Image (tube, rainbow, N blue to C red; front, side):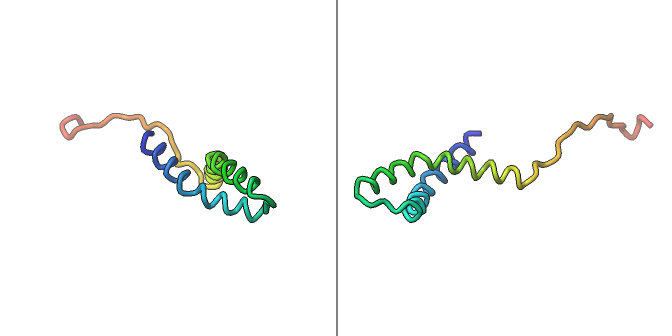
Length: 79
């Protein structure tokens, strides 16, 4: 679980600038203050965006089947 958390935080750190660039080209702020605010908002929103992506992928990629197996192991001398 710790490994998944660390990988998620690394991906979040790496993807934040890309999210900021996409937001900049979509919103096109007119002032420097708007650009700075957009950069901070994109940095804080990167976790939410990645959680949305993870949720979408979990819906597309099915989970492996789970279940229980019961029985007994019979040795050669127990037949």
